[in-house]
Length: 114
Length: 113
Image (cartoon, rainbow over all chains, first blue to last red; front, side):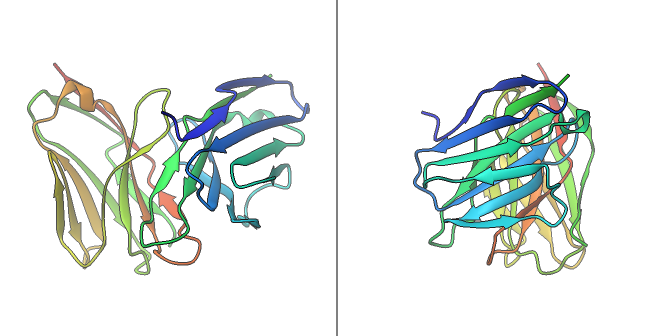
């Protein structure tokens, strides 16, 4: 059973039209990450939540926002998508306690911008 | 300093052969090195990981070799099978604080039947 679930799997939006991607988890992990992965490139961390604390990467554009209303859910909002924002968006979780530094990934949402 | 360089970009191996993927890093503060396997349409999944206090870790057909002085680590897949065909990502992390991963650019492996 999927433990990190991303919806939708495929999203098409228009240039400049706001879009929201969602991620839910059944692992009850405290930490959640959002990555952007472009074709043939490494996943790039956008931001992460350490419980309720939001941590933005220095080079994440202001166009990208995130919300985490509770432990299970996390949302990625792209306020005005540009053509360059077309990518796979990956959500991941990690258990806060213990020595395990394992990130569990969802299957991703592939975003197309027309 | 935060980069992890991965090679080759793509790899074709015959069934039963050995697949070798290499990664190099600069930041000596990294102390956790996982490898992730990603099948088409799926998210990356942890395959095997190593910490720098050991030079090798083996799990089944998968082995990580780690060279701390050279700041390099590699994944060896023994007896490669068509089911191993996937994209492999190495990563490096500092095992404290935010535990952020720095990923390599990935290697697309194809194992021919």
